[in-house]
Length: 546
Image 1 (cartoon, rainbow, N blue to C red):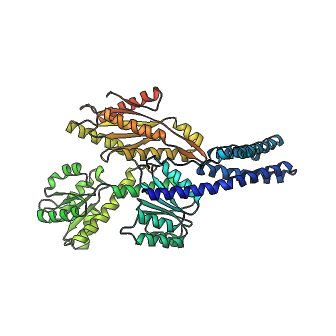
Image 2: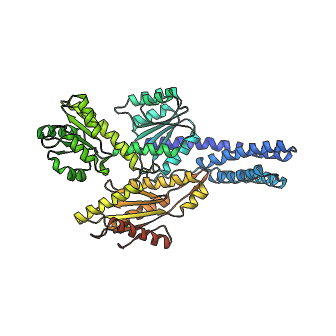
Image 3: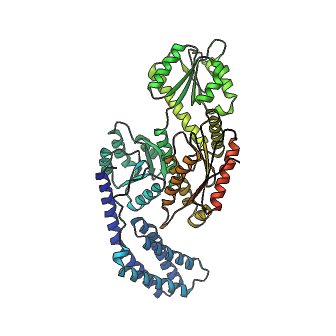
C-alpha cells in the first residue's frame, strides 16, 4: 500500500471513530434514562419490556465499541449485558438484582463521564509498523461498523484489508493500486457500477459478492460483474475466506502439468511448444513402456493421449493408468484423428474423460487443455484439502510425508517432518465459541502457508493438530523456521465479539536418517511434540528418530 492510500485509509477510519465517539455520550445517557425508568416501573411486564430494551442496547454497544477502539467500554457493556440476561432468564426475577443493575449503570455512566478523555481515546496505528504480509483485499461495504468487523476478522486470517464505503472511493483506489481481490456487499442494481470498474481494467479482479438474495437474477448480476463466489446473509465468514484463499491459490499456483503421449515426435513437440508458450509445464512420452516411471516422476494433472499407436492403443494405456488409485483424479483426454462418434464413445466408456479431434489449431488446443486442467486442479484440491483450512487432509499429508521420505532416501538430502498442536485449544472453544476456534485454526494455516516454501507440504492431521514436511531442510533449520512461526502466531490478536485473546502452539521436529520409514518419523515428531507440551508448551523441540 502506498503512503497516499495508507493515509487516506487512516483518515477514513479516524473520521469513523470520531463519529462513534460523539455517539458514546448519547448512548450512555440513554442507558441511564432507561435504567431510571426501570427502577420506577411497578408492573412486571413493564419491567420486562424495559429490561429487554436495556439488554438490546448493551448488546449492541458491546459488539461495536471494541471495533472503534473503545475496548474497556465494550467489556463493561458485555458484563452488564450478561447480568440483564440472568435477570430475564430467572423464573422469579429478583428486585435486588434489578437494583444492582441500575446502580451499576449509574456508576458506569458517572465513571465514563469523569474519565472521558481516557475512555474516549482512539487507538492510532503505529506509523512505523510494517503492513501485514498477506494478500491485499479491497472491501466495499456501506455499513462502517460491520465493515470494520470484517476487516478485523479477515486480518486475523493474515490478509491486508482496506475498507471502502462507496464505489467512487473504491474506483479511485483501484486506479491507484490494484488489489489481489475484491469483496463487495451491495444491492443487485449497484453491481452495475462494479461491473464498470471491472471492465475498465486490463484483466478483471477476482471478485466475491455478498448479496441480499439467493435468487437467479441476483446471482446473474454477480456473474456479470465477474464474481467467482456468491454469499448471502447471515454471512459465513469462514466459508467466504476459504473461497478467497482458493481463488488466490489458483492465481499464484505453479504451472499446470500436462503429459503428452504420442508416437509422432514432431507432433508431440509442436503440442508441447504451444502449451509451454501458454505457461504450462509439459512432458512428452513416445515410449509407452515408460508410462509408470514418467507418471510417478512428473505427477501430471492431465494426460493427452493419442488413441492409435503401434504396439499399443491409447485405450489400453488409459486403462492401465486407471488401474492405479493414485491417478484416478488425473483426467485423460484422447487426442486423435478418430471422428467416428461411436468409437469415441466406446473409448471413453472403457477409460478416459474427453475427446479432442485432430487436426486442432494452436489456440483451440490451448483453450481446450487449459479449461480442463484448471477444472481438474480445482476438483483435486477440493477433494484433497480440508474444507476449513485448505490444507491437505490426514491421509493426503501422510502420503506426502511418505513420498518426501522416499525422495530423501534416494537423494541423500535431509527432510524434516514437523508435528504441531495448538496449546489449550479446548479452552478457546469453551470460552470464545467454535467460530472463534475455527478462526484460530485458519489463521495458523495461513501463517504457515505464507512462511513455508512451495515445495513444503502442510496438512491438518486432525482437530487442532498439523503436520508439515520440509524437503531438503535439516532439523535445525526447520526449528528456526517454526520458532519464527510460533512467535508470530503468539502475537496475533483474535476477536470474539468485544473480547480479544491470543493462542500459542507447540511443535516437535524429526529429520530423516537415511533408513527410517515415514511412520517412524511421524512417531518421533509426535514424541518431540509431547516433550514440548510436557515442558511448558509454546516451544519447538527436535526429537531423534525412534
